[in-house]
Structure formats: structure tokens, C-alpha cells
Amino acid sequence: MSQRALLLVNPNARRGQDARRQAVEQLQQLGFELVEEKSENPKQFSELIRKHCQQVDLVIIGGGDGSVNAAVEGLLDTDLPLAILPLGTANNLARTLNIPQSLPEACQIIANGQIQRIDLGWVNGQYFFNIASLGLSAEVNRRVSKRLKRHWGVFAYIATAVQVISTVRPFWVDIHWEGQSIEVKTLQITVGNGRYYGSGLVIADDATIDDQRLDLQSWEIKHWWEPLPLVFAALRGKSAIGRGVRTIQGKDIELYTRKPYPINTDGERTTETPARFRVIPQVLSVFVPSSSER
Image 1 (cartoon, rainbow, N blue to C red):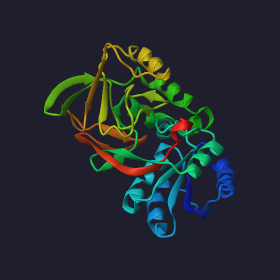
Image 2: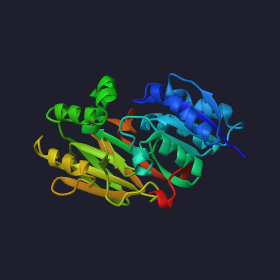
Image 3: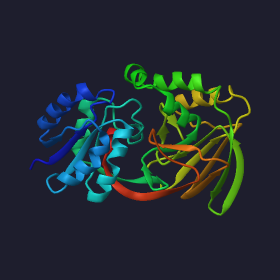
Image 4: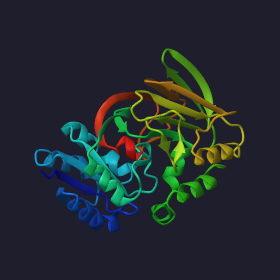
């Protein structure tokens, strides 16, 4: 019996325009009956999911992390399982879930039908799959151009970070978690629910998206060039550890700054400090590779 799937593709994703036709062909060959909705704005994804929830068995999102994040409210409201076609720039959620960048392989994972329940992060009423951040990375996301992302992919983030890193100033943050508190002067705070962020950086070596915890990383450096070795270590698939890097784990974390600082969730600016972060355990179903495929 064929499954009916709602297919939503962000046309502005790095591979969105070229990939839709290929995805439709692949999925139909694998036996899916597709309900296609075309939207120029991923912010409409949740509304479209609610509209079709009684007609479909699953939702397939084609795009990057921001596209998937745009659908989260609709997915939670309907409890439909999520399938991902990684068509964006960094595709960190797909990396965390071991979903390959190859479109035919990603479609095959959906067809195989193995589902995993995953956690979500939450900050000030905003959900996130991967990361919420403030400081350096938020400024990089603000400045990186869509044209650079489309042509250079993850290298657009690296190039922008090199340009930005000497201009961002450290700031004071009060961190409260699990009955503890500390005040730090930091260049960046990153709170992770998944494993990867940015251009494939690692938040914590043992982080998973179903570990029912958040991982906070604070870069407490004195000179602008000190984060560079941390970035290069992370690009090799290891978390940034060592002098100037503080790590904290918890289910509930609060941040207070002396003035409001913008916070990005999955690459989009959505809120600001003061901020409360929580993990919402095993709240969403996602198609993942089988154990033999990982």
C-alpha cells in the first residue's frame, strides 16, 4: 500500500530549484503518492501541514535547517513524522541524523521507513532542532550573503567568520543551570540540542539529538585570533575544547546579559536575551537510516 506524503521544498534553498523535479521522480518510483504544495516562503510550511494533515501519512521537507525549523509548529500540532531532503547549505540536522547529502540516498531512507523520536530545544517560546546562539555566530549568520551561500556553500560561513571575528567584542553573561550559576565574559554562547552547527562544527563529542540534554559552549577568549584553532579543530569533526572554552550540560539553562543580545535558532534570528533554554524530550518523529546504513 503506497503512502501519501506532503512534499514541501524551499525554492530558495541552495539546491531547491534543481532538486524538486528529481525528488518527485525518485519518490514516485519508490511508491509514494505525493501531495505537492509550492510556496515561496517557508514560513507558510506549518500552515500547509495543518491544511493537509488528514490527507497524508508523513511530511517531506526539502531545504536546509531553516526550512525544517519553519515547519516545526505544524509537525508538533499534527504529530506527523518528518522526512528530510537536505537541500540547504550546511544541513546540520541531516548530519546529526546521518542522512546523506545525496538526494537518491535520502529518498531511499524515507522509503525504508525507520523512524526515531528526537528531542527539540526551546528558547523563549521558539523551538530549535540544532542550535541557538548569540555573539559571534549570530553576527556571522546576520552578515553572510545568500549569494555566497548559494555559490560557496559552507565556505561562505567560514569566509564571513574570518571577516567578522576581529570586529565582535566579548560580552558579559550570567549563566544559571541545575542550581548553579556563573558570570563569564565571552565571545560566543552556543546552546546545542543536536551534534552539529555552523559549517559542520561539533558542539560536543558525545552529543546526540535524543540524549535529553542541552550542551552549552562558551568561547571565553582574550584576543580575536584565539578562536581560529578552535574552528579548525571543529572542522575536523571534534568539539572545540581546551583553554578559553567552557562547556555546560543541562536540561534547563538561563542566560542574562547587561543589554539585550539577539539569539539565532537554526540560523534565523528569533529572540533575544534574557533567555531561558529547555530541552523537550522525544517529541518529534523523524525518518532516519537503519542501523546497517549508518
